[in-house]
Length: 120
Length: 107
Image (cartoon, rainbow over all chains, first blue to last red; front, side, top):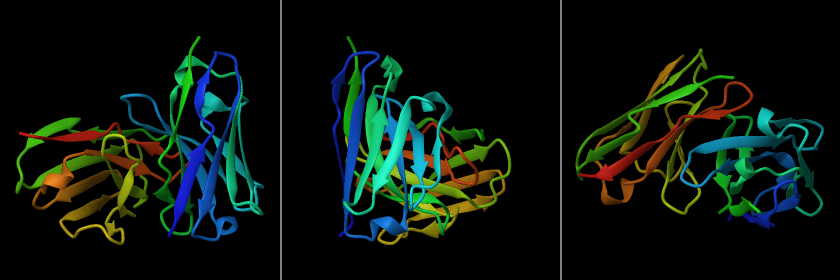
């Protein structure tokens, strides 16, 4: 069974940092692109970042470029999102998702999400 | 960035009704259009990929159509468990972008 489990969310002050993790199981992690997608409270979905299977390519939405870093540890089946210089507008539920790059590049499996709240 | 315009933003309907949701891209995305269902407090669930392919395990009352810039999600006969918010996602070019969502509510 494919499972993705996010952790690391919480309350952080503006300007602070947080590292999210996503533990995956049930599939060969190193064979898939992975993504982070977020959803602000009561709002729609926003893609945040992508990472290639070997970590050699990474892409970000403009609003987080220079502040967030996506990474992965294929030996531990873990995906990460290092979030720095956090702003109130980064408050959201953050989901990790598997990408079927070879099909329609859609996100087929998602975790349950972890809530990040940026507030003083 | 490609803008995805989804309509309507909400609709009130009844069990057994036929429901149609549309998504329009600001430029051609071929068939790189996907549809998701999201229930409150839950992660999105993939329904349709590549505009018209039904994801494994998704009921056949869901269908998708379209190509280029105009796409449609149809629910042939709405069931009680289908009341949710639906999103389209273009995956043609980076950044992937979502439509604003359509909330399907009970009339």
